[in-house]
Length: 233
Ligand SMILES: O=C(CO)[C@@H](O)[C@H](O)COP(=O)(O)O
Image (cartoon, rainbow, N blue to C red; front, side):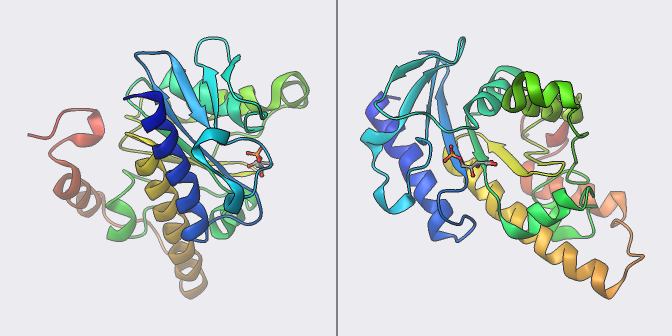
C-alpha cells in the first residue's frame, strides 16, 4: 500500500472512533502498519478529531520508534503500538480508546467472561486483563511496558482470535488485520463490556457460556479452528 493510501486509511479509522462515539476529546488513537516498508502511521498526539487530516498523521519506524515523517508528535501510546506490532506479526492495525464500559472493567481489575454468543463471535474466550505494572516498569518505560504486559497476557493465543485486552487500571487496546478492523474490534469490545455490565447486574453469579457454544459461534464466524491460527477452510 502506498504511504498516501495508508495515511488515508488510518485517518479514516481514527475519525470512525469519533463517529462511533467511543472516544471523548482527543482520547484514543489508531495506527496502521506497512510491514514491507517497516513503518507505522499513527494519530498525532493531542489533535482533536475534527482537525485530523491524513497529512497530520505521523510515520514512525517500526524497528527503532524514530519519527520518519511528520511535524507533530506521535501519540503518547506509540511505544505500546510498536511493541504489539513486533510481537504479533499477523496484525495490521492497533486501536486504543478510553471507552467507558471497557475502562470500567479495566479499573475494576476484572476480565470480561464470555457470557454469551455476542461476545463469542468476536473474541475466543474471556477478554483478558493484564497484570498491573510494577513501579519500576512505570518509571522505566510506561508505554513500552504496557505493551509488554499485553504480550505476556496473550501468551500463545492467536492474537487475531483474541483481538482485545483490558490494561489494568487504564483501558482497552484492540488490534486486527488492519486499522479499520482494529477499530471495529474496539467498537465490539465496548458493546461486549456494556452488555456484560448489565448481565452481572441482573445475575451477579452469571458464569461463562458453555465452551462448546462459544467454540461453535467463533468457528461459524471465523472458520474451523480459527483461534489456533489455522486458515479458514
Ligand atoms: O491513554 C492515554 C492517556 O492515558 C491516551 O489515549 C490519551 O488519552 C491520548 O493520547 P494521544 O494519542 O493524543 O497522545
